[in-house]
Image 1 (cartoon, rainbow, N blue to C red):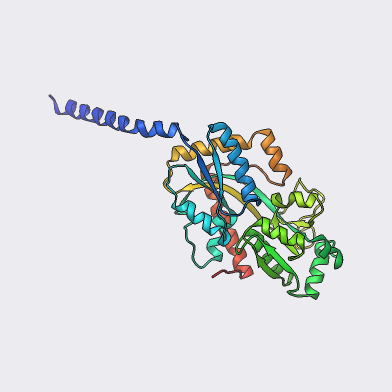
Image 2: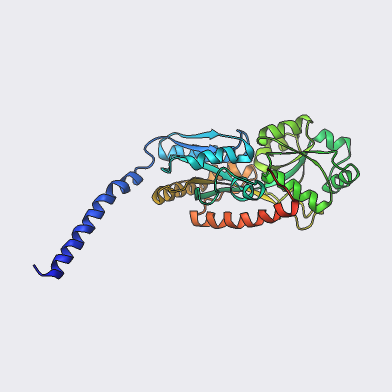
Length: 333
């Protein structure tokens, strides 16, 4: 047999063997998911991360005909649940509802993290970006005649450190939104961190804390019910869900901008075919009219971008929030 012919036959045989070996793996990915999937939420139930995860879980459960379970693992500004997700098997059956805190802020705020936000995860898709909103306990606001951001600034300057500012945890966007506000207005408040939005809002409405810069979706129902008084949104444009509430810049704090976001990530090493399938199915779910209407009514904007776009977005957000942390001086040991 001539050498060139023998070589060609060897190449063909090797190619066929490689294809045969790849078929089971490809088939396994095509059949994903074959069992229940878990989405870890690193904050308590009731917050915006939880809301986003449950909307996604419900829609994926329908399209996959499998249970998609939301598992709340709160603690340390989202670090506890995020670290657990980072350690999970990279097979697509454990996902994380990551946040601006866990994947853009915490590395600048905490001296040491139990996970690497870049190396330990692969981006899947941005689910929703949302504004934060400065809101007060109505009784506190009425007692001190605070109807606008200007009123609040005046009161804070006359009474430094007398106002308790709740947040959803050290290093979260709700914390840093408040820190940025104080830096830009020359005011001082007492920061009271909680383990999530639900306990923080409970105390603001109950009067144990006076105000909060919360994610809009988790506060919307309480605002509509008159239990919280909104003064301004933290984005550069007004929220269509609350068109009468001004932006912070419109309210007099020029140049102020701070917002939150929530997106799905998978443990590093998750097969690209599975990541792509999850992204496609989440994006399709977010385009459904009832889902879009549900999220928009709560002040959220459905996204569903590609893994590459989400990766680039998180890199930009990390740089932006590092500057905010530097300016505010916020640190957690």
